[in-house]
Each structure stands twice: as C-alpha cells, then as structure tokens.
Length: 145
Length: 410
Image 1: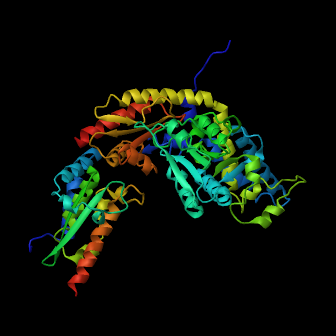
Image 2: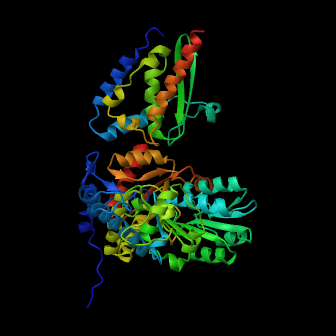
Image 3: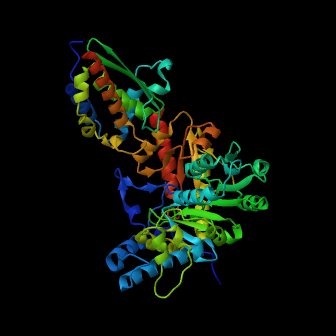
C-alpha cells in the first residue's frame, strides 16, 4: 500500500483528465464509462441499511478497514451517479481515515461537477461524500480504541 | 366573417422573460410546467407595482395605501370567483397553495365531523398532498381511508369507487387531473354519486385549473383547491373554494379570531366568510399579482389554450413513441398536457441530468405519487408537461435530446 497516491495527487489526476474534455458530452460519457467499470457490489450488500439517503436514484455503499486504510464498494441503479461514486471511490478507497475526513473535495468544482453538489433532492453527490466521511470517522474512532 | 385563429405562440413567448434565457449554453426548453409554470411580465410587474406603489397592510387602516391594497387584494378574489365559476366571493379563501387548502379542509371539517368508523375515499392517483392530510385526520378520529384502484394505464376505476361508496362514506377527496400521468378523472360522476350517500367532495385542482374550464357550480363540488404558481401566477398563494353553507359550519383553521372580528372597512359589512379562514396578514403581493395571471389566461381564452396544448400533447405522444424502448405511462385519450414515460433500462435521473445539459427541463422521479408508482410497478418516470408557450420545435428538441440520451447510455 506504500505506493498508493495521496488524495490530492489523485484529485490532480482527475482534474488533468477532465481538462482534456472540451464539451459536456465527453465529461458525461467518461462518467458513464467509469461507472460501468466500477467493481461489482455483491447483491448481499444491496440492502436498506447500505442505502444512501438524499438521492433520487438508489446508491448502496459499504466500506471495510484493512491495515489502517479504508476500502469502499458501491453500486447505483443510475449510470451517472454510478460514475460519480466510482470517481469518489477512486479518490478515497485505500486512503487513511484521517485523510478522508480532512479532504476538501475542491476538485469537484474544478472539473465542473459542482452542479451535482447542489442541495436539491435529486442530486446525491453531497450525500455520498458525507457517508464516505462518516464511515471514515467511524473507522478512525475504532482505530483509536 | 370571423376566422378561427389559433394563438400566436411566439408573441405569447415574448411575454415570458425567462424563456429568452439559456441553460448550459443552450436555449431553455422548459417542459416542467406541471411542477410550476413560468410567469408573464404582467404578473412580475404586478408584484413590483404593488411594492413600489401601494404596499400596505390590508383590511385595517383607513389610509389611502391600505385602501388601494385592499381593493387590489379583493379584486383578485372576485377574479378568482369568476375563474372557477363560484357564486360568491365569500366562497373564495386565499391559501398558500393546494396543499394548504386540503389541509385546511381535512383539519377543520374533518376534526369536527369525522367519527370512528367513518370512511374517507381517495384514489391511487393522488399526490401525497391529498393522501397525508387524510391519513393524519383519519388516525386522529379513528376514521378509515379507502383507496380507489386504477388500471394499468392509471385510469380511475369508477366501478370500484361505486363499490367502496356507502353510508359510511363521509368524504371523498379526488384529484381532477393526475400530476404524474395527466389522466383526467370522472369528477362530475364521482361528485354526484358521493352526494347521493351524503358525502362531501373535495377536488384537487392543482393540475386541472390551468388546463380545463372549471365551473364549481356545475361540478357541484363542496371544495376545490388549486395553486397560483401553476396558473402562471406567483408562488405561495392558492385558492380554496368551499360552498358557503359548508364553510359557515366549519371552525377556523388557524387562530387569530380577534383580528377576524375587526375586519371592517369603508362601511362595508362582511360576514365571517371568507376571513375566518385567513388568519394573520395574508400574502398580499402574491394575491394581487395572481389577478394578472387569471386575466392573462382569460385574455387568451382557456379553449384556445387547451387547443394549443392538445396539439402539443398529440404531437409529443406520436413523436415520443418513435423512440425505441420508450413507453408512455398513462397513454389514454382523456388527459391534460402531461406525458410521463420510461425508457427501457435507463434510470429517469440519468435522463433528467443529460437533458438538462441540453437545456431541456423535465421532471424525473416519483412526482410525489409513490403509491401510484408502486401500483404501476415502477420507481419513477420522466415527465414532460406543456404550457401555452411551448412549441412544436421544443418537442422536437426533447425527442432529439432523448435520442442523444439513449446513445450516450448505450
């Protein structure tokens, strides 16, 4: 795990990748594409307690803690949300709890996706980030005991 | 010789400033009118003219501004009366919207009249606003809520309603036109049948009031509730019609009785109605501007508007059906200009996001009708709803937009 890039390093990578897109179609096709590539979340995890509230589509997410780092898995019934959660997993999965909690997520604005952070009932990115950070806090507290 | 002329949609569009804007660099195509309609300049101007010219609290104070504001406020009540064909302005109560109108009736009439074992009938098509208030009062009073089922196309099953109707039925609350599907319910038949067993009827006119000609005296409904913002008027104001005798027998919904007693101006004597249901300073500006919205509709003519919307609905239905994998939910003859649809294997949220990026506003989700969605075996739909200012070209934009959505997600 020593060679896992830091959260800011991954964020910079994503910003660089998005800078290549000059229209909205490319951005969203990319999101749809990385959504399709998201590792499968086993059906046993697709239960109510793993659902994230505050999203028009359904998002299931689970996390596990291994060797001081957190690993997330998720799925959604909507493709763009699945792409967004795939992007978040790329940033957070394999990171230390404290780093996840501290991440400012400014890159989302930099890639022009802040519209998905809007506080309407249909957008779930904010809820997903909140859940990932909450999981990190829980693992961090267990770490200290 | 008079020529039957259609509306000049392009000059109508010019009366709606917002339609000139762009969204994500593309011309706005606004097809979310069932959620709220856009506002013509006359409505926007009425708001600023009130605040700039004669802002004052109404029904009290004898000074000029208060008199002007009161006159304008009451002028809307008279226009609302004409708009729905009520016999008296005493039967016109200003509310915050349809939801508050229904809550007022459920709370005030229901609390005083419902007894354990009494039955309230609603339908599967109801918006949550016409379900939850009845669930709450039914639970409080030990009354029962009965639900009329719908067909697979979302049509009200009248025979099932007749079957549910009995001497135990005390109240029927029914949506006139479904916000989720657009289907129109047989309200006149329901009202007559309900009256035959002594039950009262509320019609939720949130969707119908902008599309259909409403005459509450012909309908003979006991209550009719609708919202200003869906009839080209401001948000935060609505109308509750109630038959005078029924309203007179009801207790006020909210406190403020002593103020109600003070209602008196310019020598005019008022009965308790409609003011006993309007506690506190009302939403004066929006009520005043609502008149401009009614005048706008009446000026164009509801029949002419309905004809244009029917053209849009028919064209949109035929064009959308050309899209492989698209299924219209509620594809029936008798409906207002609302089209709900699903695309095979594509989540409505993806449709909404990708259309938004093309400047096209539709609504996606369960449309606050979760029981209906459950009955139809779907989690939600995408919904395009048309107003008088929408055009054939905008429907073409929607169809092209949906082909693009399909291509991007394939």
